[in-house]
Length: 349
Image: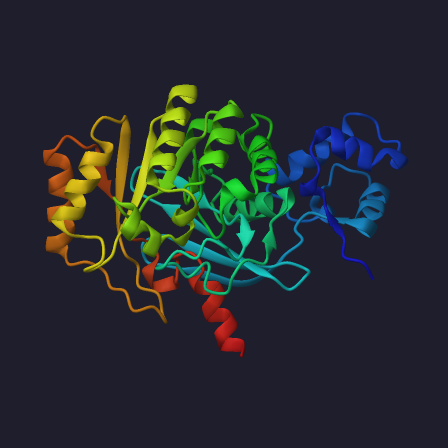
């Protein structure tokens, strides 16, 4: 028996075309997505204002959620992580983050595995498998939204899970267009952040798409020699091309770029590195997120000392660089990208 098709794969017009043979009145095409976006329905059977016969016909071929939830982990800091398995057997992770400002943030994956091969990251240890579809990305968001009580809603969305967003941009933009729609989840576009390893052509395409999403570039090093080691993809681009593309993004959108910098003990966390980073960013309208490394089983790298982290941050601040330290969340539940997926795989082998 063939796997059922998720209704999340279809935009409004695509849904009409897909269900044309059912000859439904137009108002049904607003009712159906309202159930999974606004009313948090996870199945067709829950759509109780649809006639029973219609629900039965839809359920023969379609579903809402296509994945099986393999794991649901909760941390004391309010972080929750899901491990989902698609019908083809591949798995992805997504995370719900909470903070004391009443932000409720969904962090989702864009690909199964990752081809970027960043030195410190669990996401790419097993290599790239495939892109996720529009519906698979939306499903992650809706499943995380279901974890919230009725009095709460998702306020922010970060595309920072497994995979490189700019290598799956058409499907990603389709998914984001759906969840930011006022009729659906109504997440402000200005509260959506897309994180990239730094692909200049992809950054320019995102800028030309004329959307209001934020851009975060995973920099992790202030010079090409070190970045080639930490982020192998850099050998094909170089920092200066990434900076030029980021400048173009700012000029085109008016949104300042965030540069993510994972601090790794004795690798990229010295004052000299901070001074180099200052020189690179001094004349740019940007912000730096410093992220102390989250240890990954099987990798030799360590979290920097509090002193090294403080000295690095103070060097940036004293030179006028806008920065903040992003503290780790969900450490007890393998919340870093790729960790739960790999630990689940290893436990089954």
